[in-house]
Amino acid sequence: MEEGGSCMRAAIGAYRSRPAARTAAAVGLVVVLGTGCPAYADETTGGGQTTTQPDTGSGQSGTDSGAESGRGSIGAHIRINQSTLASRGSTASATSADVNWKPPVCWYEPMYTPEEYEKFIKTAYAGAGKPAADYAKKRDEQDYHKGDKGLWWQVQFRDLTYDEACPVTPDNWEIWVPPADPQPDPNKLTPETLSELAFNSTKLPTPPVELQPRADRLLVNLGTRVAFKGDLDRVWTTASINYKGVQLAATTVATPVALKVDAGTADADPQSCTYDLVKGKDGYTADSEANAGCNVTYLRSSGSGTYPFKASITWKVTWTDSADPDGPPQQPGLPDGLSTFEQEVTVKEAQAVNRASGMGRN
Image 1 (cartoon, rainbow, N blue to C red):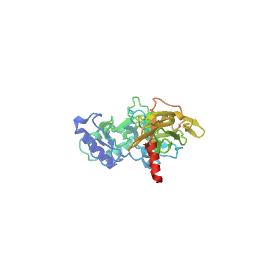
Image 2: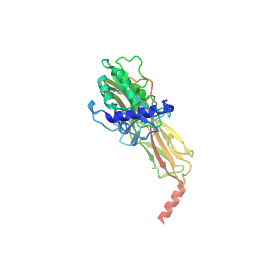
Image 3: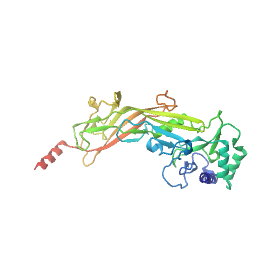
Image 4: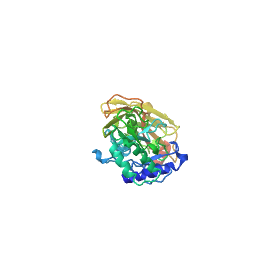
């Protein structure tokens, strides 16, 4: 507790010594090396992106960040669990089709009973000078809400995002939340917040496509088939919390709906094309063999360079307010997800290939 308290005291002191930086837009609050204590965008904390580690007293051991593995933890007590991917190919973090969409930067989670909170404040702030001592005094004057029903909730952060602001100030690291909350704080954890964190932690399979002929043997005016090699299934990710009687969960469900291919140059016919994905016996697939209209014909050689061929899958994303992926979809909706495969392709003139082959035979 002392390490986190020391960090919090330092953060409060830094904040209050900078009057010009007191707006949420000017102050970037981030978690410092898993302590659960916020610091500032213009302070050096060291290390890479880190999430707060789970409380092992909750009955679950610490795991890797959900954003890295699709399974793990975010904040203090949020668990991430993703369905097993049907695809055996490579995976990547889902990206949003809406470039303006961003996951939550911070939120409040349940942390302390009144008695636990009193112990935390009196231990972590023992001997603290101003202004951190004023913070502890304010809580002491509130008597930590001892005798009241409810919990102290503490601000938590998604990761060390230094360039984003959190709309929470050091004056309210923790908020008191009664069982019946008449005016919930807008940053209090909700199923909607969990759905956004789950979406941000989702891993999606990259498009299982194969070029025929292969990428280094494409020829001008020769049709290139974009073969869809394999089936995809929906992917669900659950973010949940079960701590001190607070139980919340949300599950995002990503369903593949379309495959778009882009030849990487205007000198191709078509330059881009979209396959609809339909559900078959083994999952969602594209009939790339029958859909000859999406075969790419390159009209000009790539010369000494290459063309950046791209294939991307659009995933329709919905969410439920439980750990059940088959529960009723909730609103507001989430943006579509994208998973992308990129490959450099070499396109040669057929006569140049024939001439080179003839020289080889001599």
